[in-house]
Image (cartoon, rainbow, N blue to C red):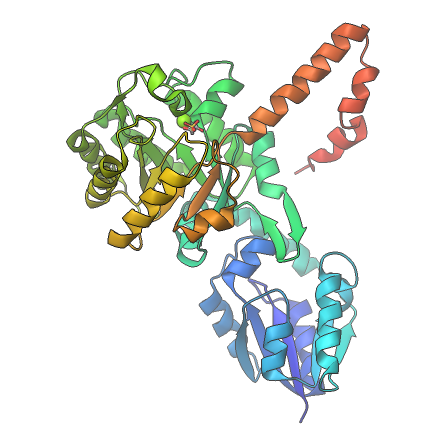
Length: 430
Ligand code: SPV
Ligand code: MG
């Protein structure tokens, strides 16, 4: 009997899947490959159904003899292991980013005389309806837990700032095809700097929580990715515990609070701003109160250490972060305004000798020569690109405003703008 291989990433099995499986079974004994959660999340969306349940779903089908895990979008490794006679696929991968994958399948199969059999891809009404299930990803229960789940299987998450609906959509939808596969952001950072700047205000906890929550609402209405809120100092403990519960209820995945007190100013001012660090005991009490207040297991409270910003040294940063983890913090963010990554790497290397698993978060605004890959090699699990959408938008908007003033008309500014047609069709009607 011929050996047939077919790969799936779907959360739900509908008629179209059953029909192609039936055709595959008519060709021989069918092995189904299931893409891992990580691979599905990287090229499509976060899977609603986790890998082990998707495996069980396919194992129970009469057309399927066995199920294996396919660990990359590229078929080469799995095909070389299984050496099937036939690979089955719909004919929907002739163009687009999958065309390369298809070409490699054909080349790999050649080595043992295998063939690719493609069946016409049929869009069914059921499939259309089920694709709306993506909307479930934005529900609080589903969205909230996703940051923890991503941290569970991805060594390093890439996070970008969003400060309103449109920037949320940019973080949600932007994808790039790289030689190593499709890439997209894993989560959004709702920065205090960007949220304040977008409202024309300084980053001093002047934009109050009610206003921050309305920014979150605006972003959450149009996106599905997990959200990390920059919670500044977390405020008074008595207020913090209420805010934790509100954020949880909304479906925010994590809040990061920093160990400063008094009038908070942006960290990148460093020691010039005369900022005060909280005591270890004071900040630990805030973390513990927040952890005791939260109602779900999913929500994360991440402690941000300002010792390097305030030039208190590596030992102080380490002592504080270990204490914060003991007090219940689900992760530590080590911040730095240095132009090189040296002090952050020294911190990470020393921290990891004592604590192998607590997630480390970094914000490489000043040391941005480092790639996510280099940061990850030092044990950093979340890289936040904290302010880049607003910083890139501002000069673009300013140039347009100047051009209109200088020319007394907007014709010259057309070159700086997207077309009316594009802006009108940017957002699909829902
Ligand atoms: C923010 O984005 O608001 C931050 C990071 O807190 S930083 O601006 O570097 O302090
Ligand atoms: Mg901030």
